[in-house]
Image (cartoon, rainbow, N blue to C red; front, side, top):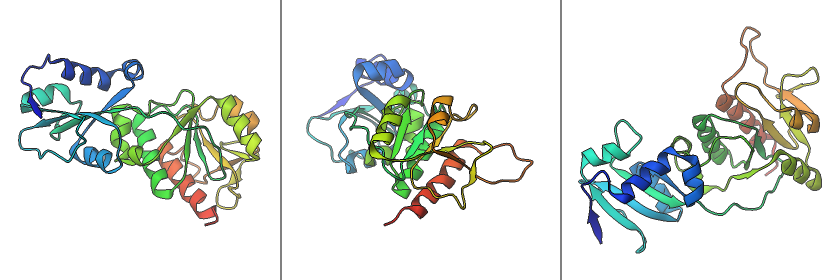
Length: 252
């Protein structure tokens, strides 16, 4: 059954706005919200736990599970709920899935305190394309932030990204016998083009780089060579280069 809602103060719409705006609210409710017809199709395709769908007139109702709440709203009401300047006609909410156990393998990418949700989402999208697992350390942007979700272009529904403390990550890597390789500008850093990437690679915060805890634990460091007049690369761009090298070095 499709409901029709015309009030901007409808409890479901208020709930969705809070999911978009508050990480604490998302965590408390165990849900997140996303925007866009394409993302909705991806969530359906990968059988993500969708709880509600909000559509404007003219947007076709997709094939949904019987327990999904479906609501139609006027375009002005959609505009009041969507975080996008030009809403695409579909909003939806999903349950946040339970996290899988932490596992560090050769070829894992570890993100340390990466704070920009757009960078995080772009990296997850690229990691999905390269079939590289990703682990987030404490301080990373929220996986379920709408900007992160949108930037993944559906990769978030196809993969399971684990979050853990730095100490847990180091302990797991040591237990599994996996070297930790830090992407950091240090005197002993090796050129990524010749360094063997036979471990898990750590990328640090956009401004401060990798924390001291990970640097002390790293078995070695790598750098991406670049023009001397350039200070650094965008975190997502640097990650893409590293992801390509991880994929290239990994035996099939």
